[in-house]
Structures are given as structure tokens and as C-alpha cells.
Amino acid sequence: MASHRRPKQPSRARISVFTAAAATAVALTAQASAHAAPAQPNKDEVKAQVDKLLEEQEQSAEKYNGAKERADQLRKQADDLQDQVARGQEQLTELASGLAAVAGDQYRQGGVDPSMQLMLSSDPDHYLTQATSFGQAASTQAETLKSLKDQQRRLDQQKQEAAQVLHELDSQTQALNDAKNDVQSKLAEAQKLLSKLNAADRAAILQGSGGTASRSADRIDPKSLPPASGYAATAVAAALGKQGSAYVWGATGSSTFDCSGLMVWAYKQAGVSLPRTSQDQGSYGTSVGTDWHNAQPGDLVVYYGDRHHVGMYIGNGLVVHAPRTGDVVKTMKVDTLPISTIRRV
Image (cartoon, rainbow, N blue to C red):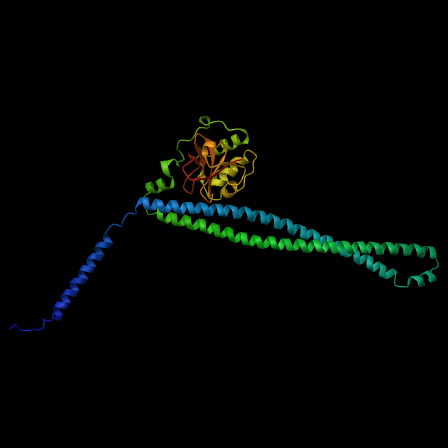
């Protein structure tokens, strides 16, 4: 018959040994991890994240451009209205002073009843002449009073318009600051990711496909392109002349540009004023559709569904554009990005 015995409990000494061994193992593992080389980030994963961040940054930059343009317009409008209010106040003060002078003169000269004045007057003809003058003064007073009321009404309206514009300017300034902060946040996040890579990998990601972002890269010779006509020819030549210039968000030249800023600057050289943002440029001029085969040199090619990027068609299936932060003005195949619309200026 088998005996049933309770299992022998480990002694406290054995427990202490096991615990110490486990602690040693943990410490050794931690020490080994501390001395192990940090895992190198995957370049392709970093590139995908940076590409996404820089695209979002460009979207925010175009919002900033639009907000800044509107804020500039509102600031000028507010200044003009405030000038009008100041001039209106001066005119109101002059009218009020004139009215007070007429009223005071009437009071001084007309304190006695007119019939009594006529009876007491030693020179009735002089009195009648004076009475006529008083009648004219009363008429003048009535006209002055009407002008005073009209001027006060205009002044109140101008003050109200100025207050509304200043309120909108405050809102637009907030939108401007929000867009600016968003741009800077995206750039800082992208820079943090890029800092984990070596210099060569960072440059390759920032310079985009083909490595053509280098300032010393081969540039397109305008003579190799089909000729443009009219002011489009001037704009194309101007844009191509800026190949190698750095992309800087919010910039419109003459040495740095963002995508829509390059278009604004290039066409300005031809005497044409374009809207500031790529979204507004996507509605400017005449639509050529989305088939780039119908494009002519000088046409604006606007990309993506939200139209946050734009380039200029130069012929031979190419556009010149300012790509993104870390890159420079250069050319690319016109259909590299999804085309939203092509506009003829």
C-alpha cells in the first residue's frame, strides 16, 4: 500500500538562492540590453511618414497663404475705413461749429419780437433788410442741420463697417496663426523622424525621387522645349530661371518659393497678377480639363483633390514646380502626381 506523504517544502535557503539567481538573470539581461546598439529605423518607413507629414505641411502652408492674403486685404480695408471715419468726424465737427455760430447770431439779434423791432427801429428799411438776412440765415441753418444729420448717419455707418472689418481681421489673424503653428508642427515632427537617419538617407528622402533636387543637378534648357506664346513665354522663362532655388513655405521669390508662390512670381514678371493660393489658381483662367496632352506651355497644372500643389507646364510632358521643404525648384513629369485641373492663364 503506497504511503501518502506531503511534498517536501523548499527550505528558505533554497528560495533565497532561486530569488538571487532570478535577480541576477534580470540584471544581466538589462545590462545586455543597455549595451546593445539601438535598432536602426527602417528608411522606407521613415520616408513614408516624412512624405505624409510634408504633404500635410504643404496643405497647411496653402491655408496660411490664403489666410495671410485675406488678412492683408482686411488690414488695408480697416485702415481706409478708419481714415474715412477720421475725416468724417472732422467734417461733422465743422458742421456743428457752423450751426452753433448761426444759432448764436440769431439769438443775439433776434431776442426782441420782430414786430416790436420794426416799431422801435429808426430805420425801417434797414430792419427789413436785416429780417431778410435772418430769413436767409434760418434757411442756411436748416440746410446745415440736414447736412449734419446726413454726415452723422454716414459716420455711424463707417464706424460700424470698420468694427466689422476689425472683428473679421481678428478671426483671420487667428486662422493665420493656427495654420502657421500647424506648418511648424509638421516640420518639427518630420525633422525628428529624419534625425534618426544618416545624412545620406536624409538627403535622399528630402530630395525626392531621382535625386534631382540637388542645386547642381542638370537643369532643363529652355531651348529644348517647344516655344510658348505671349506672356506665357515670359512666365515659363522666369520659372525655369529659378531652377535650384530653395523651397520655403509662404515665399513668393525672388530667391525662395513655395509652389503657388513660384507661379505668382513667374507670371508677375509677365505683368499678370495670379491669386496667391494653389486652390484659387485652380479656378483662375480657362479650364483645359485634366488631360495633360491638351496643355500648352505656361498652363497651370493643379494637383490632388484639394488642389494643394501646383506646377507650370513647360512642354515635352514636364512641369516646373517648387516641390516641398528640403527640395528646390525643379522639373518633373507632368503626370507624376494626380492632376485635379489644368488652367490656361
